Image (cartoon, rainbow, N blue to C red; front, side, top):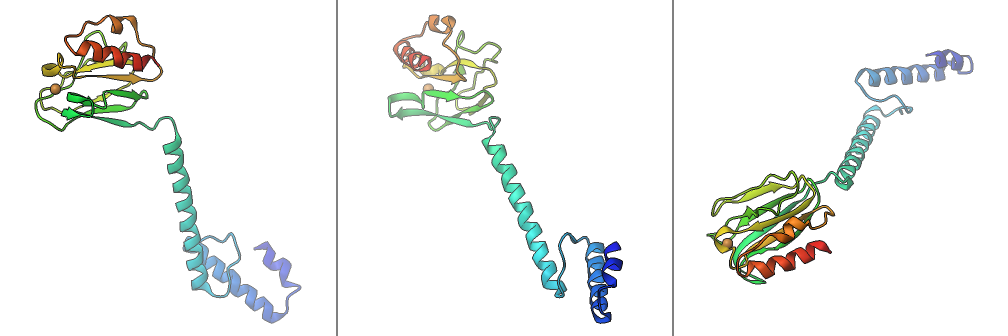
Length: 200
Ligand SMILES: [Cu+2]
């Protein structure tokens, strides 16, 4: 309010009235919660709408920036979907894809597409501290990959037919223990290929 008195001496009576009116409008705006950071023109309502619009725009921009930060951050976890199929690009009885590169904190979901499959972690092929899992036949399994390392996964009834998959979490090396695991039938060569891929 100090400005009012400072200006008053230099204003003619009419101008003083205008100034008083302006102050009153500012006070009215302030009491309604509107900003008084900038001068408010004679046309009260359109100016107020303009300010509201600008405030809305500002908060939208802030929200967009916050969302962009959240998505760009390393904490954003992905869900990798692995289909269980009777026939896939690589032949009969397959996980597709059969190799997944994941980041710690990601999840992998074994999706039921065809009946008669399951997803089970292979003994000796789990990251240190990783919780082994075993889905029932026709059960969708979602696993949280919170530990870096290598997961070997099999479909129990089709293990010997080579229905296996490897999930690599982070930049882990393939441990000797995982390389030493014995696999039946076609899973033997299939797993050797997948572990070679994981070692790259
Ligand atoms: Cu299967």
